[in-house]
Length: 166
Image (cartoon, rainbow, N blue to C red; front, side):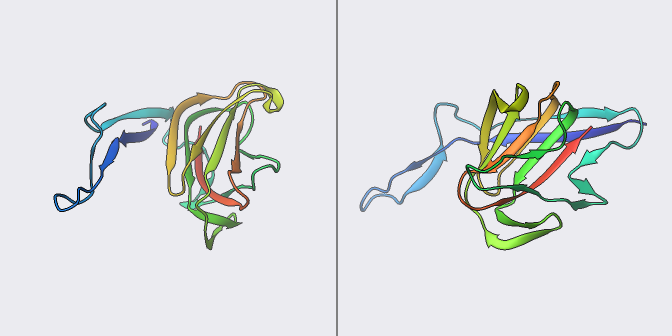
């Protein structure tokens, strides 16, 4: 028996049509450029055994990561030079309290995620995740001296839920 991770993703582009006085209320419709929801799903084999290795979770409980305020030292998730079968990163919508407990203070600042493409962050790709949002990236190979790094887009620390699966 082999281990695997199943995943899916979808998007629906929406546009808001303004209200027309004495005719119609404001309403949302699917944007006409795509005209539908887009999505896909797949399964990634993780190991030839029944168990895989996960960083960020243990016995069903998250070990929250921390994205510090913009302009500080970026925080690395996982280790350099790791071939991850699946990367899951979620902006919890809360400030960081500890690795085992979320703060009760909401945080709506965006989470910035960097994929380091050369040593010492000399070159990196980056994307942002809004509060409550998440991404999954299958089959990411972080070559020699490369890694995943995070920071808050604002002045408050963000608690990150993540699972890095090998």
